[in-house]
Length: 282
Length: 282
DNA sequence: ACAACCATGAAACAAGAGTTCCAGACGTCA
DNA sequence: TGACGTCTGGAACTCTTGTTTCATGGTTGT
Image (cartoon, rainbow over all chains, first blue to last red; front, side, top):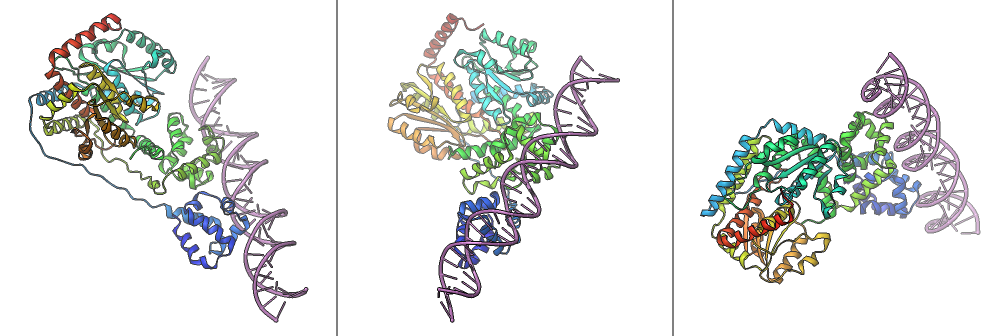
C-alpha cells in the first residue's frame, strides 16, 4: 500500500534504533495502517512516545508526518476495471412436452409484453423511487413470487418488505405501512377474502398500489390500483405458470435500475461487500 | 469501504438536503475516502462548510465523526487485505426497454429448452414418483423460487417441503429426510459455503438430487446430482432473471402430471374441497 | 404577507494532533 | 570515574481538526 514508505524503512532497517524498530515493525506488519491511523495511535501501538514517532518519520527523510500520509494516499489512487464473458453450448433433441411447454411460455411472455403499455414504466419507477417503503404481497403461489420480488427489489433500494402475514399477525406488519408507500400486489385466482380488507386498509393509508394480475381481474384491479399490469397466464389446464409474472416483475426492476443506475450500482457493490465481510459464500 | 455508512446514506438519500447530497455524492463516489481523509477535507471536496459536514454525520446517527472513522476502520480490518479493490465497475448496458427485456427472456427460455435433454424428464418424473418426500432448497433469490416450487409441487402430490433452514436449525429439517427422498436444488451464483455440507449430508442419506443451475456450474453439479438441468440466465449484468428456472420447474411438474393424470386430478379436487371448507377464498 | 421553520456558512471554541524542548538514562571511551 | 554522545519520554507549545453558536437567507404554510 505505502510502498515508498516501506522501501525507505527497509533501506534504513539496519540503522534503526530499538524504538524505531518497534515502529517499523508495526508499519511493516500492516502496511495500510499509515493511511488510516494517526501518528499518535501508531506510537501507542508500537509502545513508544509520540516524540520518537515524529523523529522516526523525519529521520526517514519526510518533512512531516503529513507528508507521509499524503504520499500514502496518492499511491492508493490507482485502480483498474475488469470485464466478464458469456458461454455457449450445443443444441440437442426435442420432446413433445418440452416444445408444448416452451411454446406456451413464449406466447404468454410475448403477448404480455406486446400489450404492455410502455408509458406505465416511468410512472411505476417514479412511484417506487418516491416510496418510503415498498411492500410486496401475494397469496398462494403468488406468495412465492412476492418473496422472490422482495429479494429482487431489495437489491435496488432499501426498505423493501414482504407483506406475508407471518403468524397471522397482519396488523403487526400493516402498522408499519404509511402514505406514499408502494404496495406491489401479485394475484391470480383464487383470491382470499382477506384481500378486500387488505386493500381497504392500503387505500386509507394512501399507499400506491401496483397490481400484477391476470386479464380477467385487470378491470377490477383498476378500481383500487394506481397501476395495473395484466399478465397472460394461459396454461393448458391445471398447473398455473408464474414465469410471466416474474418476468414482468423483473422488467419493473430493470426500469427502476435504468432510472437510477448509479444509486443502484452503489447499493449492489455495498451489499456485495457485506456479503464478503460475512464470508458466507464461496 | 464503509458499507454501513454507505447504507445509512442510501437509506436517507431521499431526505437529504442539497448540501448533504453533495457530501453524500463525494462519499459514494469513493467509499474509502472516509477512512483516509479528515472531515474538513471532505467538506472542501464537497464544497460545503465544515459545520454542515459535521451535522451531516450526526444526522446519520453517529455521535461523532470519530465514530464514523472508527467504524470504517473496523470494517476494513475485518476484510481481506485485497478486498479493497472497490472498483466502480458500472454495468455498461442495461436491457432498458421492454423489447430488450422480452428478447432476453425469450432467448434464455428458448435456448434452455432447446438444449434440454428430453429423455431426462421421464427419469425425473420417476424419481419424484418414488420419492417418499420431496425437498426443495435454494439460497438467496433461489429461496424464493424454492418456495414457489414447493407450492407448485404440493399440488401434485403429498410430502413436498421446502428446506429453508428456518431459524438456522437445518438439523431439525434435515433429520426428517430419508433415503430415496428427492432433493430439488435450485442454485445460481453466489453459492453459500453451507451448500457443501448440505450436499454431503444428502449424499449419505442417499437422497436423489435434481439440480437446476446455470451452465457454469452444471459440470460440477453432475458430480453429486442424479439429474442436472442447466438453465440459461444471461441478464445484461446486474439483475438476475429467474423466469427460466421457474419455467423449467414447471416443466418438471407438467411431466409429472403427464404420467399421473388421475392421481393428480384427484388431489387437486381434494385440495379445492378443503379450501372451500375453510372458506378463505372468494 | 407574515411567522415559523430549516438549512447554511462564518466564526468562536474545545480537543486533539504533531513538533520541539528539555532532562534523564544508558552506553562508550579515556 | 567522569565526560561525552545518543536515545528516549514527558511536557510545553503550536497548529489543525471537529463542534457549537449565531446570524442570514430561503422555504412553507396559514
